[in-house]
Structure formats: structure tokens, C-alpha cells
Image 1 (cartoon, rainbow, N blue to C red):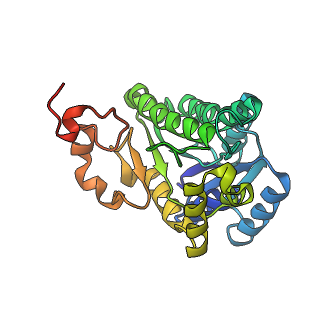
Image 2 (cartoon, one colour):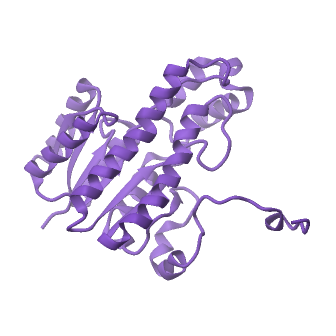
Image 3 (cartoon, one colour):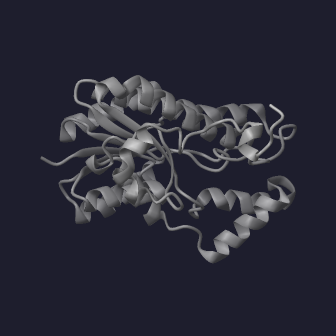
Length: 281
């Protein structure tokens, strides 16, 4: 029997690459996006190649009723949901803390963090009797400070800790959840940085974005492959980890599953003096 995977933000960018990768791997895919036009174009494109394996509907993942409806629609179309890959997100306001609009800041948290919570919550509710796999996405600011992008960075760091926490709560039900950093994939988010300019986005990140865009950035296929792996049975036993699609050699992780389970590697942690060779604490 084919696996069923829900992909959020599946109409473009990384989410679309994830949907395509899962379909090519033989899974049924039900995806969502907020924009109806983009969703319909992607659905038509995917159905031309995978006519009976893909479905979609519009949804705002920051609205509980939309998330509930999304899962109900996926179950009606394909049966039990085996995995969820949550790629939907927004960049939010760009600027220093004294310059950004608080309402835009809060809306970013609502979409990027609360939306991840709602999607993960519904997935866990659906999977408690069957087990399953969940992949959330982190991004810039999750592992290091990202000046001028405080809403996005704060939400993505929080998503990592949310992942670690849910992994502990849901282990007894056979639900495994990980958080994936896709790398510097060129998406429309980076167009926002270039449009904002260096005075708003910050000289360092603006220049880095220009260089990455000119060089083509990281491949969305790498992020899609990593997401599909984490959503598959090949990743069984791996949970509560913060994974870089580009740098972490995740293909070899199954051979080290026992070490991953017994260690805090690939998690968020506080750095103390002894970690840097200091002996004053």
C-alpha cells in the first residue's frame, strides 16, 4: 500500500520540490498553499505526471480550522496519513526591532511558529494510534542570530525547540519528528531581501544574499531529498534532531541511530565556558 504524505506550502519553491520528490518515491501526496492560483498551476502540473497520486486544496496553516480540514481532505482522498512535511512559511518584516511593525512581526510568528504547532498538533492527533513521521522546517536564525529578521529568526529557532519537545512527548506513540534546515535555497524570500536593500536588510546579509543568488544558491533538490528521507521508514529511530540538508551527512545517520538516541548532538543547546576551553565556571 502506498504511503500518504501531506506537504504544506507545496505550490512553489522547496515545498513543491518536496512534493515532487515524494511522488517520485511512490507516495501519495496531498499538498496545500494559501494562494489558489499557484496551487492550481502546480496541481495541474503534477497531475499530468501523477494523475491518481496527488491532491491539493488551499489552506492557511495559521488557522486551526484550515489545518483540520486539510487533514480531513487528505484522509478522504488517500486514507491514513503516514507522514507530514511542513514547508509553509513567510519571511516577515525586515528591519531592526525599532523599525518593524509589531503587527507584521506578530503575524510572522503566527504563521511560522503557531502554524507549525497547529500542523504538528493535528498530525500527532491523527497518528497516535498508528505512529508516523513529521518534518518541520527551520531556517535562517535557528542556529545563529539573524539581525534585521527578528520575527523570522525567533520563530524558526522556536520551531527547533518545538520539534525537540514534541519528540519527547510523542515517542511512546511511535511518532517521530525532526526539524530540517534546507540551506540557502533561492526562493522569493530572498527577492524580499534584495528589494529591501542593504540599509534595511543589513549590509552583511544583503551582500551574502546577492552572492548566493548570483551563484545559484543551494539546490532545492537537496532539501527535498532530506525531507523525503526523514519522512520515510529509512529514518526510523531518528527523532528530535535539527538536521542540515546540506552539511550533516544525514544519509549515514541510520548507521548511527543508537548514538543519535543517546546523545544531545544535532540539538539546540547553551554554550558554557568549558565548551570553549575556559575553566572559570
